[in-house]
Length: 319
Image 1: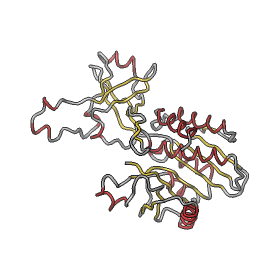
Image 2 (image 1 turned 60 degrees about the vertical axis):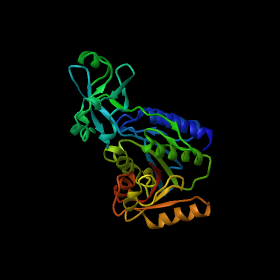
Image 3 (image 1 turned 90 degrees about the vertical axis):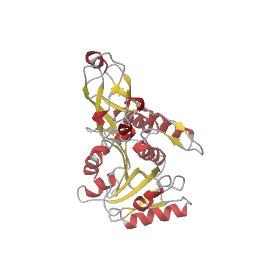
């Protein structure tokens, strides 16, 4: 990855964009495209970032990656000033305990911690079930002295995300919050920047969509408006190289072995053949993931809107 693209990705994942609060991320991507002389850039009423090259061409192609991430909203503040959160998207509750979060507060970012009981205060029986089952069982400590003090810092409904930033690992690998699916939004944006300098013979519509995590919202609304003939969805998928027992359910998917092409009734066979042939001709390694029915990505939204589009799913493996 060149330094220009890497800098964009680092900036993008540093911005909290939980579902419904994606604007700052969209603004960053929009400015990046504007500097590359991409025209027809707009953020629509739902907050989707859209751009188009050669809009008058008869064949419409939509490339999409959602920009929202899983997060939280402040649901309740108790008399002692502890916050209780409600999830936005699919939160794995058992993994939240002890995590730091950052909340979009009244006057800027507010730091907090999901707290729990020390193991020293638990009975042997309690230790067997120490992991909480419900998010409402975990209090967030923001250092407030009471309810009024907490509400001077945050509002009911203030959005929040886990505070885990860019951490380089070995072999050019990285751990970071929000790769699902800031990676997809980054890829379609970078592709659009590069293609802006090329002669494109289709109407190429790029979408960084909103609220995928809570129902493919931006995917449906933009696909309805664009009405694409072909849709390419870029998202993430599960790698099974760490949890090998998952291979039987998600396939043999590994980091470092290339993008993953979705195969199954949702995905257009001839479009897949074209993608796989192109990858082979350019010596790009690929992996295949079989899906027997529609998955929770905007490929499904593009396929099921209006009269439907021929769609393909391109996924990045994540652990």
